[in-house]
Length: 570
Image (tube, rainbow, N blue to C red; front, side, top):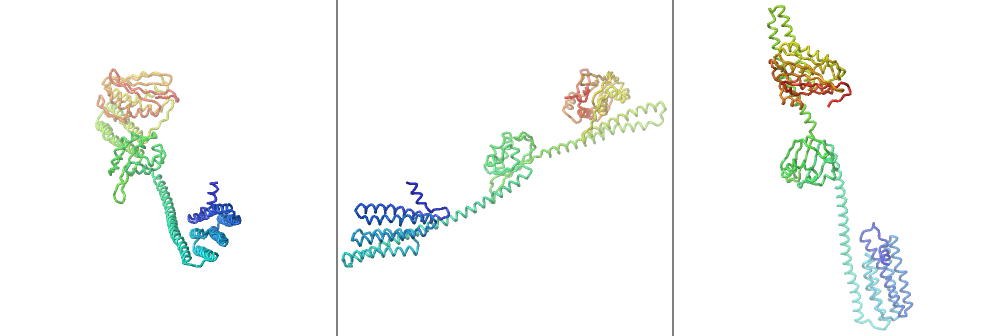
């Protein structure tokens, strides 16, 4: 029953109508329901007291008065529904009232017409409102007059007062309800105006939101395209915006970063070094950092960045801008340039000192050549060749070392007979060994083959043999031994001289590019490049060099070579 009443009240109401129009439609529907209830009530009362005809007339009002306005509202004609309801209601009221007067029923039904005028004022607008109200007033005055004539009463002062009271009642109803209605209409108009303003504001806000969204997308696309880490923080340290590079670095979506405090986003080990700088930047200080750091995704980068305070138009700080650049490649290039510069300086030092002196010695030898006998010339030529070999060997080492530093070193391994290479190297240094009366004992008897670049192996063995002779004492001894396994061959060059210190050996094993050259036992000068060059060359050939101190004095240099192409060396 309740749901049926609610449905009836809302018949004809839709979203396209204003709130005022919706209310007037509901009022008509409510009046129809009230009228139906009153018609049923008064009809039943008349039926109870025996006024059957009167009851039937009243009951007919349901069909004439109630149903048509509801139907007109339903089909979208609310104005006609209001006029119909007022017109038919007035006719029925007049009919019932005049009938009661003519039948000498002293019911004073005109009072009902006074009340009915409120419906007229509420539902209708000018001029229909004035017309129907005047008809109602006229009907009431006629009814009062008719009652006087029917009972043969003259028009007295009381009758005139009745007229006046009736007119005052209608006037009060008209003016008070009309004033209230006008105020309601003003309120509705104000609400409508306010609603329209809100709607306009809403559209403006939506437009601004779209513009902001578009600007934000443009800003996002712009900062995402910049190959550095960019973010903004407010004065609480919360991320306002962060570009997409943070997603890769921090291992989380940008949506999870923005709006969060940096203390919850940055790992503890980054906070340890950056937390203080961020807080200082929030206090208005520009902060800068340049450090190697590990990012949450596990990679290491060399980061250079700044925390820069940002201010509004009133010079009040409202946050900080953060810029971080991965300069790992730049640092790598810087290190390479530094190494190349050191290489250049080392080359210049060697050329100016270690190469110049042997060449000057050669020039000195050449100056005493004149006036020699044939026998002296032959000895001189042997010495000259030995000096030339030493200079050539030093220059060769120097050039090979420079090549490994600047453009790498090439290796073309093949099967090489070790015994023949060792004998060639011993022959090269025979004159040097004779000058110091150093005996070179070659204990390599088998011509086993190893997998290596032949020229590379010669360069390594020449360097090791040259060092052994250089640091051997007069009348000293050098031993060359071999030790073979199924996959490896170890060639050991053992001397009993002054040798290298433990610190120098460790320095070379740690990857030093060169060491400070010591003067040999007979005053020989070297470049300090031979051993580091040998280590680099052997690595290219899947081989290695093991240096150690000889317990009997001097050094042991073990060249560990692979015997076949598929061998592995660690």
